[in-house]
Each structure stands twice: as structure tokens, then as C-alpha cells.
Image (cartoon, rainbow, N blue to C red; front, side, top):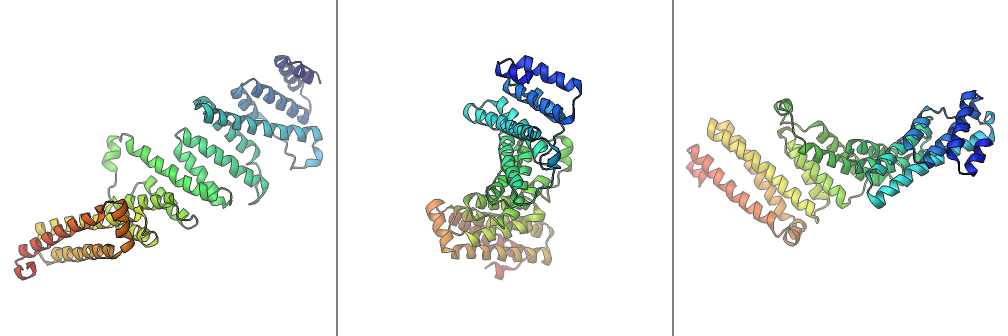
Length: 365
């Protein structure tokens, strides 16, 4: 009562002394808990966030849902008040950042959201679809947004992944897309980080990195449940581009490019997928030609000719796709068509060179 009186008289320091004294006396756990709640409240109101979070971390929370009959109404009320004040402090600091871009407010929002999840929404198993589970996903969305703003993209991606897999109809689709966006940003950050000499020496150029594998797998997972938005098409294209960069995964890259072409031929992502398909085969053909010239013999020559047939067939298939060619003309200034024509010209010259090198002037024409 004395503590409340000091609070009413706007004497927070004296009120805090009273509540600290209650803790020192060693009263029962409920009274001690209520005193700690009051101290957290005072510290939050005085913007002593670090101290409030430290105190919250040391509090043993009596849950109203666990053996509730043994908790007094005052204690249950204190528990709910504590929960409300921590969430309010988190959202207030988050809003301060949105208005002013004050980074310290964003850092505080991160700590407060994390504390809220740990202390109030993780101590019991929550049935899927329950109000607690729904609140947990809501707060995780806020926290993921904060972490993304702080540049903690992998932590953000993990939170979005958890929300997506919870199948919460309010957030799952958005979280799935943001999961991939966060992983994409992680890839961008990794690409600009200077590599150590050891990393450069040990990097495997045949297969994607662990982070790239995560990105491709995430896109494959959300593709099954998220409708084909522009963001999803961009993610599918990026997956194909990632796989195209490694010799052991180029066939998968072609599969993904062709799938994108098949589903969304009237989009510019399809135009880029078509170009990627042709580029992969053209690059492979260049290596096959080099081997055929260097090694000679029927086997390298046959491999080159087989690959040249694949490339020619791919270009024929793409040129037959009227929707694709129309989009290329309108949005791409016919760059894909010109690229295919140039590739066909080089292909004919390469075939002639290989036949002439083998002394088959009839086939060379």
C-alpha cells in the first residue's frame, strides 16, 4: 500500500525502495512476484529498459493457467499486467523506430519482443490454432521485421520459416515470401564479405554453398503453398540462377527455368529463364567444343554434337512460344530473340569447325 501511495504521489524512487524492501523481507512467492512486477513497471516508465529486462529475466512467473486455483486474483492480475506492459514497451519502441529511424529504439524493441516470447509464450506447449499460438506468430512477425531492419537476416529468416510452417492463415503466405527475401538478403551480404584465403582455397565450385542450398530449398517449399506472385517468380528465377552457377546443379537449373516458362510464359521472368536455359547449354557447348578440339576422337565429338542438338532444340522450343516472344518484344526489346539468333550463328560455326577438324567435309557442308 505504501508503494502504491508513493506511485500516486509521483515518487517512483521511494516506491521502488518500498518494493525492494518487500523482496528483502522474504515474503511468500506471490507477494514477492507482485513486488517484482511493480519494480519492472516503474523501471519501464523511467525508461530503465536494461534494468527492467534484467529483472524480468530473474522472475519466476506464476502462470494463471497452471494450478490457477492456488493463485490469488491479485497475482493473476499482476501476471497479466506484466505481460501487457512488456508487449506495450516493445511495440512502442518499434513504433518510435518507424517514425524516427532511431536505431536504439529498434534494438530495445528486439530485446523486448524476445523477452516477451521467452517469458510468456514458450513455457507451455501451445495447441495449433490456439489464441496463444496466434499471438506467438504475431509477435514473431514483429520480431522478424525488427531483426531484418537490424541486418540480422538469418535470424529473421528463421523466424519467418517457423511462422510459415505453422500454417497460420493470417501470416503464413506473407511469412513464406519474407523468409525467401531474408535468405536472399543473406546471400547478398555473404557475396560482399571478403573471403579468407582458406575459404577461397576450399570453396567447392561444383556445388552451391550451404546458404544457397537453404535458399533453393525454401523457394521449393513455399512454391507448393504460395500463389504465383511476382516475388515468387523472382525467387524461382534466382534459384535457377544459383544452380546454374555450379556444374553439378546445372541440370536442375534448366528444370527450374523450364518450369517457370511453363507456368508463367507471359512474364518477364520467363524471358530471363529462357535466356538462362540457352546460356547454360551454350556454356556447356563451349567446354565440349574445347574438349573435342583438344582431345580429338569420336567420343568428344559425339558429346559435342549431342549437346549442340540440345541447344538447337531449346532455341526452337523457345521461338515457338508465342507468349514468350510477345513479352520479349514488348518488355525486353527483343533481346532474347537477338541472343538466340546470335547463339544459333555461333552454333553453326562451331559445328562446321568440329566436322572440318575431323575431316568430315561433307557433314561440314
